[in-house]
Image (cartoon, rainbow, N blue to C red; front, side):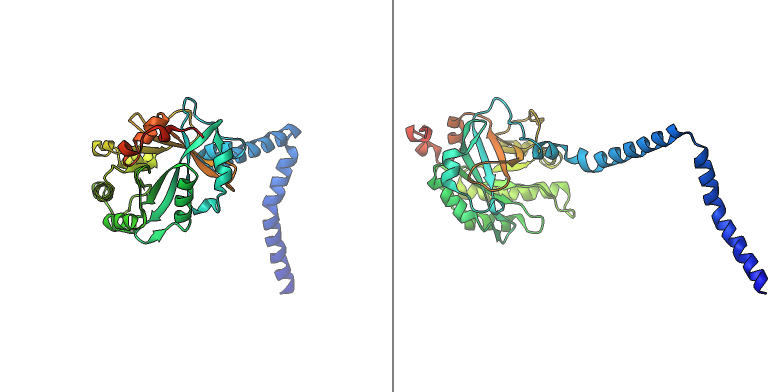
Length: 292
């Protein structure tokens, strides 16, 4: 009994060892250069997979992180947009030393609200300080897929007191609720725009990225609103329609701000920018163009 058992164990052991032994003998017969070719092939596959999944989709960000993003040429009116993510801003330093492509910062877009019940914790401070230090300021609302458009509009109006000389209110819309059809979504966006326009007496600005605009907000009804496009690290905007602002990088650096900040340009002159502000007929004058 014991001898039969040992025989079966040895038979199974030889059966398990046989394939590995076969592979070992096969590998021993390969020429030396085959190992080099195989190693190079494995490395090449690894690089391709890494590039496809981790580099290609975010290639613009890699370029920016390992070198300053190029500033689009041909534009002189530069600005930034901020929220609580920028922390405590040294506005005096930003005003005196902040430049983009050797041009002063002209405007600051500030996050105000999100959804129907969230206000940015730094909004009040940023909104007051930006005006105190002489920037043309604006306030934006981040559209939520979890709240009704009319409730979001009411919440923005409740918390944002735009004055003469401020830029029009901004709707930052980047997501569409899964349960909404495209048509219902467009109607919801228009509802927010109409309510806010009626309150402030000026057409709001629509902020979104290029592909979202083309997919969901390309109807001609949206062309009446100033467009602020987010399109990073390209030499020129691919969008063929009219646009006012271009957010061209989200990894800018400026004195007075710790960490990254979004850089934007205005598609026009400083005079044009001031014409876009609320109550521009009363506010535009010599003081509006005073260089500091």
